[in-house]
Image (cartoon, rainbow, N blue to C red):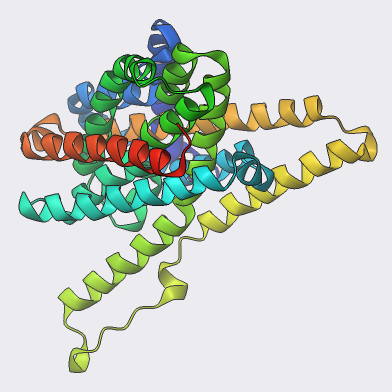
Length: 352
């Protein structure tokens, strides 16, 4: 046990220090417009040449980029409850179906047109359609994505988010949207949580509250998407390996992303604790449950920043630059289409 700890400690501590520095940088910017995860990944990429020379850090960095990442996604489930899905209502779920279909449908269409790697194309679509870096981080291990693809996908969604935080409130007021309508629009069309919060509260306090709830509920779509891509990736590997008789055999038991069940377990725990607080069981209160959830949520966010920092430390900037301009254009097109589809779906449902 001590031997394992000694092998991992150097890389874990390096990632933790990088995460702390990234959170400090993010806090200096109003509304934390540039998330700590983006800072961690970029700083990590800058420090990559140094990390390559520090052999005692390599194993711990790899552990953080994989295991700590999955653990952080599991803890993220405590921020959600099944009651929130019901609270947001059927209209937001309908809009989410439209935006997810647009993100992955057009994402694959333009990805093929541009001759892009299917993994990078779908990582960008996941970041755009679900929840930015968290979705990219959740899907990447199930499709064996390269670190350079992860870094590029996060960069693409981040750049569009910066533009949207500025333009969304302006466009919302120009369209005469209600607070609820704008909250639904921002919550389903803007990518990263921090950007959703910034855009929502820039419009109004009520819009900010509603957009945050919609955004958190949107995170639940990670579950079916991760399972779907784990299956697709396994089928593609089996097909390329040329199985006997031309039959493609996929072991669902082997490829199933079990950490997603733990994620759902955390969602169920939050739902149970909320119900117990309402009933006053064991003297529990909504404030107490909220405080407990806030602690685990903070651990989840810090772990996610550590993992993204570790991915940055493993990523050579030159390999990211080789992807060129096309994937970035792909990200902007898909993000713009999601914004348009979300607005159109709300107009169709009379929710503007």
